[in-house]
Length: 417
Image 1 (cartoon, rainbow, N blue to C red):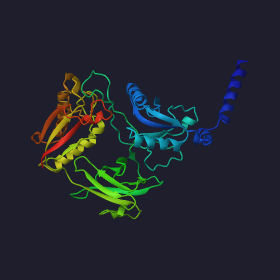
Image 2 (image 1 turned 30 degrees about the vertical axis):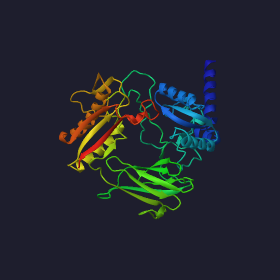
Image 3 (image 1 turned 135 degrees about the horizontal axis):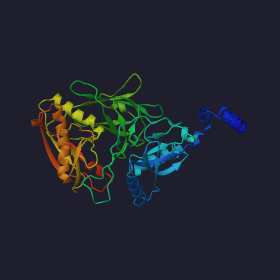
Image 4 (image 1 turned 45 degrees about the vertical axis):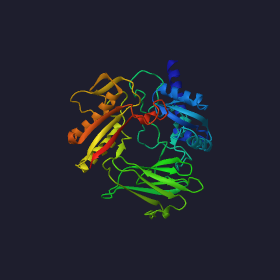
């Protein structure tokens, strides 16, 4: 009898295996119009920051904000609209970018769960830039993008001057991807070094002059498509700022871009706008926008490596350069300071560290010192470098504002060139 039951169960299992639709077949039956679209205003690795951000959107801005863990991204997504209408979601994201403080709002198309037994969850997910010309007829896997630094203002009083810091890998909401078809004019921002015309990695901010708003940030030396600003004049400002070089701004008209000097169309029809960048000069001060520090630490995060390497290249390129490294924090509260142990060379890791207490000024000084020490470890003479610690004495914004993260920064001043 037991033998009969065993074979009956085996037969039943075999039946289900034979007649169970394959994953591919189930996906073909899935209606892509049923995929949810979320209008996202922020993403956080810590739930407490997502709660605080959601409360701000609800109480101060009267938005119907909610947050939920996106298991596909391992981040808490704060969103203000969920709809199956992709067009509606994109329109709302564009409106928030133009009319609210959430200038990096994007659309997430997909589920927050990651249940492979669910047919809908087996479809890919994508973060959509509402100002870029992306093909969105069906979801695609998100392309790898540089990490973005996010620091959320803290409502507490404990911790040191910038204990508010939280790094979060935000989707590339304000960065356009290479030309993927769709409407708009193709542009190629040709970024090169003035001295030898060697190509340089960098981005270009596109500004709608009439509305004084940023339309997006686009990669240099790649063909990208830009939608019309839909303004009366069609005037745009193109701003290229690459660390180690002087900022360059070019003004063009979207409707007649070739009227600008040195602007041509290449064989593919792309509008080629050259940016020949000049190295920093004596008296110039440049912000290291892409140098980030671990929370409460005078240790750089790994994503800072590219920019400090650019500084090293600049110092090696011109042996007459002498610089002053300015360190700034958000506020002046004292607190814990994590720093490298003696003789450690882990400039980008929290391994082999020590902890202590100190003022905001001491924290900013140690952060300047670690950049100086990194350069020295790579052969730059210490006599060519100075460090100036400011703590929170020179903020760019109020320490509790939504842009307080910009107060936490390192600046490089050229003393001699």
